[in-house]
Image 1 (cartoon, helix red, strand yellow):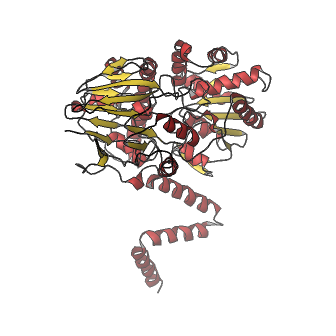
Image 2: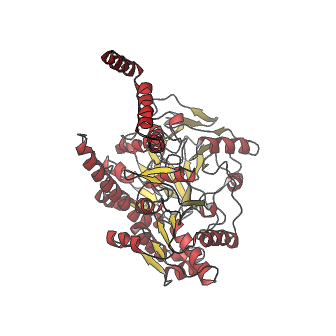
Image 3: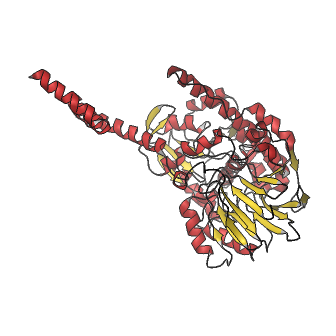
Amino acid sequence: MADLKISFHGAAGSVTGSCFLLETGSSRILIDCGMFQGSKTEKELNYRPFPFDPTQIDAVLLTHAHIDHSGLLPKLAKAGYSGPIYATTPTMELCGIMLQDSGHIQESEVKQFNRRGRRRAREPVEPIYTAEDARSVMPQFVCLPYKQWQETVGGIRFRFWDAGHLLGSASIEVEAALAGDPQRLLFSGDVGSRYKLLEGDPQGPTGVDYVICESTYGDRERDDYTQEARRGRLQRVVAKANNGNGVLLIPSFAVERTQEVLTDLIALMDAGSLPRTPIMIDSPLASRATEVFKAQSRELENRSAFLRALNAPNVRFTETAEQSKALDLVRGFHIIIAASGMCEAGRIRHRLRNWLWRSECTVLFVGFQATGTLGRILQDGARVVRIQGDEIEVRANIATLDAYSGHADASELDEWVTARTPIRKGLFLVHGEATARSVLSDRLSKTVSAPILLPGLDESYLLSKDGAHLATPSKPRRLEPEQLGHADWHNDYQSFVLDLSDRLDKAADRKGRAVILRRLRRALDPEDVIAKEKENENALD
C-alpha cells in the first residue's frame, strides 16, 4: 500500500464509539477503541464482531480514559489483540478502575437481562467482557509523557499533546514516513474548554497534513463561564432547589465532572454563599477515581481547592450497596452526585426511580446527553419515563448547567483548529451528531483552505500526496447514517407505550378504554378486526 489509509469505525455521525484504524503497507495502528452509547441500535454494535481483525493490529494509541474512547479495549484483547496500548500515566490509572467498573456493570446487567429472559424463553446472552477481562488487559498499557516521540512499527511514530479535556487526556500527533514523503496527522481526541476547573488549556502542533477533529459542540455556543460566573450559576440552581425535604440529584460522569462539581459546591459553602448541606457521592467509581485525582493532584489546576473539598465535613462517599440504599432514609435537603452522567446505568437510575415523581426533587444535568439516552429524554421534557420496568411520572424540576462540559464549544473548536493551521491536505470532522458536524464544517470552510470531510461509519479514505480520497468499501457498513445519533425504534416504542398507558388512564370508563384498544387493534391488523366484527354481527343476527 503506497498510501496511508484511515477507516472510521466509530464516532462518525455520533458522539460515541471512537475508533480509527490507520494502515500502511506494513502496519495497522488503532487510535482509541471506544464503546457505543446512546440508542439501543448503536449500543448493539458493542456486541458485534469488530469490523477488522484484532490479531492484525500492531499498536493502540489511546487519547483518554472515557469509556466512549477506551471501553472496548478488554473486548479487543479478548478477541486476540496482544500488543501495546500507549497512553499517559493518568489515563492508564483511570482505565484501571473505569474498565473494571464497566465490566462489572455489564455482568450485572446481563444477569438481570437473562433472569427476565428465562421467563420469556429467550436464549441467554454473555457480557461483552467481564471485570476480570478488564483486569487482564492492564499489563498491555505502556505509559508515555506528553511531547515525547515514540516509534512504533512500519515507520510510524507519535507523541501526545495535552488536550485539556480530562486528567491525562491527549491529542495524538502521528507521523508516517512513506517512500520519503512523511505524512503528519493529528487526532484531536476530545478538546477541553478554556474554563475547565482542573485542566489547563489544550495544546497541539501546527502545520500538519490532516486533522481528525471532534465536533461535539460544533453547533453550540456556551456562555463564557469564568470561575466566578460558573459558581454563580450553580449557586442559583442549588438555592432554588433547596426545600425542606427535597433533594438535588446531579447525574455526573464519575471521572472529573464529579470532582469539579464537588469542588465548586464546597467553595460556595466555605464562602457562605450556600448553607452547609450534606453532599453524597453515590458512586464507587467516583470514589476510586477521586483517589487517582488525589495521587495525580500535582497535575491539576486549582489543586488546593480540590483537596479542600475532599476533606469537607459534609461530604460523604458511599461504597456498598447498603450505604447507597440508606440514602433513601435521609431527611432534610441534601445533594446526591451519582453516575452515570447520561443516566444509562449506575446508581443514578435508582435515585431517579425514587425521586422523579416528587416535585421537591431537582435534577441537574452538568454534561452532554447523547440522543436516545434517559438523560436526553428527561432533558427534552418527557412527562413519563420507564426505569427498571416501572413507569415514572416526571414531576421533578429538570435543570441544565453546561458550564461543566468537558468539551470545547463552537468558538473554542474554531480557535483550536485555527491554531493548528496550516492544515495542508484535509480536515475530518468526527465525534459529533449530524447538525453539529454540518454547522462546524460550514463555519470552518471560511477559514480552513483544506477540504473538510464528514466521514460515515466504517468509511475509509486513502491519504495520498494529493489529498484524501474515499476508498471503495470492502464490507457493508454496520449502520446507515440515519441510524446514528438519533432516537431509534426502541425509543419510539417506549414513548408509544407510555403515551398509550396515559391515554388509557385518562379514558372516562371501561367503554372508553375498549374503544382505544379496538382502534389500536384495527390499525395493527385491520383485516382480522373487520372479520371478527362481522362474526360478532352474524352471531347477533
